[in-house]
Amino acid sequence: SGGRKMKSVLPLLLSLMGVGLASAYVNPSLSSFSVRMAGGRPAISLRPSPQRGLLGLRAKEPEQSPEDAAKSKALADSWIRADKSNELKGLLNGASLYLVGLPGCTSDKVGAMLAKRLDIYSFLDLKEVLAAAAGKPECSGYAELKAEIGEEDFRELESKVMDQVQAVLRLVVSTDSGIVADVGNWAKMQNGLVVHLTGDRELLMDRSGMEEGEMEKLEEELGGFYDLADVSVTLDKEDAIDTASIKVIDALMDKIKNNPPVRSGWQAEHDKRIAKLEEEEKKGKPGKPPGKGFEPKKSGDI
Image 1 (cartoon, rainbow, N blue to C red):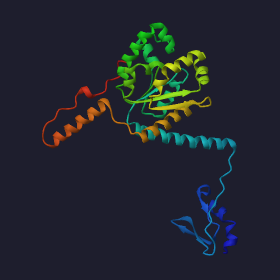
Image 2: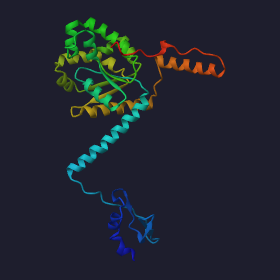
Image 3: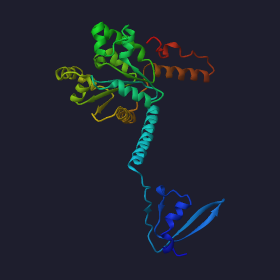
Image 4: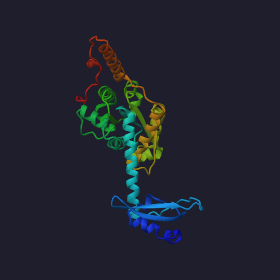
């Protein structure tokens, strides 16, 4: 059969024989083709014409309704997001994440979604922990809790809670805006990675209900501390919470890939002791186990 005649029915034949046209390339320079049976299944053999160039012709994408197209895009996006989340889990190596920012940065909502994406991580809302520890579980926000127990007692309690939190791995922790101003708390957060969530002043004011003068004062007091965070992520008004969490994932992946973190604190010391123990065992000398002093504290007291 002539190639010119058969080329017009080639896409139909491929379709009938179960070849996926959406992912296949059809060569228009084919002068002939033959069909054979391979293992009981139809197969197609194509021979290009030496007189014509090999020009690739991509088959048409199947027609979709706007609703189906939107669903397909959403599914593809979800796969991409899952891949990013899985890659970040490996890069973090168990390091906890601390979300900081001015009132209105929605660190609690973004943190909860981020922990959901990093499914082996747990989310810890510091304001709930502090309210429970102060015996004021009815307090729904930092401002209310500070009004109940006083700023000084609040900061003292925050420091004690952070003593426990900083020793636990695989946490996503949302914090109070002023936590960064305490040198001790800042040092504790260095056992993990600090993520600064920010946005337009109007956006933060709208979400927090704060007046412009109050927000401006906080920016002046805390802005320099936020600049020390490992990554800074700008939130837009249009960002859904899941979109914000993916922004954080992207920023962290970029940071870690370009600046591999050094294992710190009890982890580094524990690794040294283990390496020494293994070396002594190779030489036939009994060694001392690493000991409890280099294990992270449990979070049961929180």
